[in-house]
Image (cartoon, rainbow, N blue to C red; front, side, top):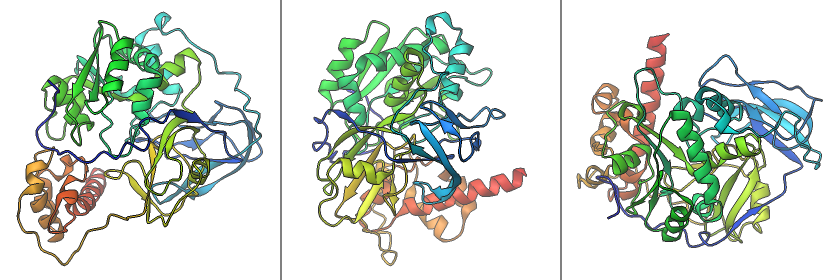
Amino acid sequence: MAKTFKGGLYIDDNKKRTEKVPIRMIDGSPIHIYPLQQHIGAPLKETVKPGDKVKVGTVIADNTDAFVSVPLHSSVSGTVKAVERRYHPSGIKVTSVVVENDGLYETDENIRPRDPQNLTSKEIISVIRRSGVVGMGGAGFPTHVKLSPPEGKKITHIIVNGAECEPYLTSDHRRMLETPEEIIDGLKIAMKALGLEQGYVGIETNKPDAIESMKKSADENITIVPLKTKYPQGAEKQLIYAITKRQVPSGGLPADVGAVVLNIDTVVQISKAFRTGMPLIERIVTMSGDCIKNPGNLQVRIGMPFSALIDACGGFTGDVKKLIMGGPMMGIAQFSADVPVIKTTSGLIALSDDGNTYDENTPCIRCGKCIEHCPMNLMPLYLNKFVRAGKLDMAEKYNVMDCIECGICSYLCPGLQSPLNSIRMAKQQIAENRRKNKD
């Protein structure tokens, strides 16, 4: 029987456009832009200056003084044209390294493969850190930190997230069909780093071919776990509960229940970091939506502008009302196609319907749908009420910080409310207040 969690709901997955389209590699762009903000943690400092020559895999930014930080590498060879503030997919301007691609794709001399079997756990984690590996499912949390649990926290379960529950996205699905051996290899390297003998891969049952593909590549040390097709099955805490029946406590982390969760593309990158020596310089991006002429799954180099990916798919068709980086439930709407692909760009969805049903003048009808389906067992209707009334203390008391921002409450609301908007504002303000109090 497929495993699952309490709450959530089935959403039309809209994956048919791309789920059977093989991964296609495309060439780099004339100009690559590398925002220095590409992961959760300490900010990076550029290590190059205008006029410098770089190669594929050259470190262009780092912060060696911070543990929760990873370096950023050039994905092309060429010349650094500028270090300046450019727009990030989040909509803000951040310091970015701009590289003119010479088209040669020469590899940095420091790139070399390493045999993980000859390395200690500490050495494996160090290689992963130096390779710039982060969670590539959206959060961008440095992977070496996940593999270095706090003192006193014993990790018993490592889980690879193959659920891919967001509508439209199929990049993980294609990875599981086309390169399952790389997924298993990366998982086993991570298992060695943690000293574990058993690993798990969770896959939703709407991907039976992926389940079969992964089972063929796995051995007795890897368990493939079928998961009920339900959003947000791929959320970290929900995935942990579905597989282990352990519940991450309020305000807690997966390590508190002995679990580590890694994304499909993340473990593939771990494998590449050792087998080829290549750091994180590329990723798979799903191009979909009713306004993409030729939807598909593209293997692209970090730093390419979104416009280049759109052109590689034949451009837009019709009137695009919304362009989203990521999935439509948790992704970020874009104001321009000139911003670059970053480490957490899992998809670009172009839609003819902006999906905006919010009406601030309509009242909450207290139907309770948001409470019934909330995967975190929160009460969104009350959180929305508290935030609108300026009662952040009450919102915090009712665990607003536990919200995973899945968007179900706003998606379901027949009263056209948007609790998620209120919750996001509350979380930002509470986090800011906590920082100020700490300072």
